[in-house]
Image (cartoon, rainbow, N blue to C red; front, side, top):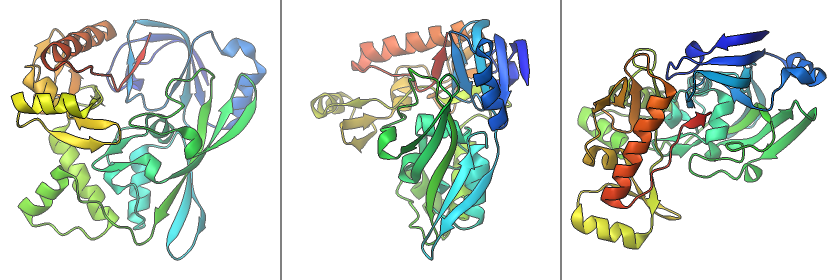
Length: 337
């Protein structure tokens, strides 16, 4: 289905009012080929959208085409006594896929429960939470380029996954992730090493023995810390946790002994939420936007915010973190102009 001058306020979790020149719903391969057959459907600016949970439309009008991916399906490809390979289409809700896997006691993505995302966007962003990343279970994905009518397959290595990154994040060509394959395990080793999980298990004397219990625990933790986008519009974590070198960290540690940090292959990872809170932004509101009172890493829309307000607040926070800690914050969300 094709829409002209369509307002996508209900299609982005920040609840930003933005009218797009053209929106095309893509449910199946016939829809893909329809786009290819008519060059007028695409514009000089084209955006691929899933659930819109990580997108900030800056302006009131987007003079381009939005491709809304809505293809559905989950199936088993192969299995043995130890593992199983499942295939999921990109338009599936990520949490539905997690529930499907955990409901069958297959492990590998249980710590990623309740992450707001479509399956396709989860690959683009290499979503991660509570000690897991999607790259840890990812085998391959199939893409389609409606401009060249070409299908292509990428394996794990070819996606060049990194912290909240894959080669699809900053595309130079229009490639739609159509479906993915994950390898999950029938006798998984549950990862309870993350501090929030350990604290919850110890404080409530909980015993976690299977992926479903872990996914439920993670969901409880997330719900207690993060605002529901349907009640208070937001895009989850707004900034990435920055990585700094050891020398810089040692210097900060002298001034801020309690600074939370995590090991990283590229240095030391610092909790962005802690930095933002120390800078006085937690719970602070500026006009229609602000940083959440319980989680400083989450920017929220208090009502009728414009994308420009979000970007302006982000820039002010970035400046203050640079001035105080000499750290450059990088946005996790996708800014769309």
